[in-house]
Length: 117
Ligand SMILES: [Zn+2]
Image (cartoon, rainbow, N blue to C red):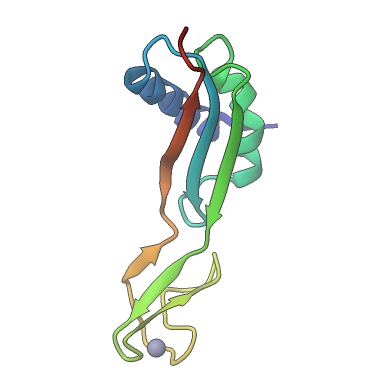
């Protein structure tokens, strides 16, 4: 399975966690990943054991919340969910909109570390 892209991204995540929690054993990592972030969700899950191997994050539980894309439509004056592959137009009235509000997330939402002592 080719997960090079996701592996590279997760390696950065592991490095980031090491910066904020140096020397602490990480037990859980939660992320938010948009369906238009360019990340293949299943590959991300599959890459985690490899990316975390030999780091403070090794054996940590990994969960990624998939964030559904939404656009803001100025005609409806509302935010609508759109399909991952749907063009950037309002799904209700068809107005083109480039105002993507969600879907590009790739962020650590929280981590849990082992208590010291
Ligand atoms: Zn609309």
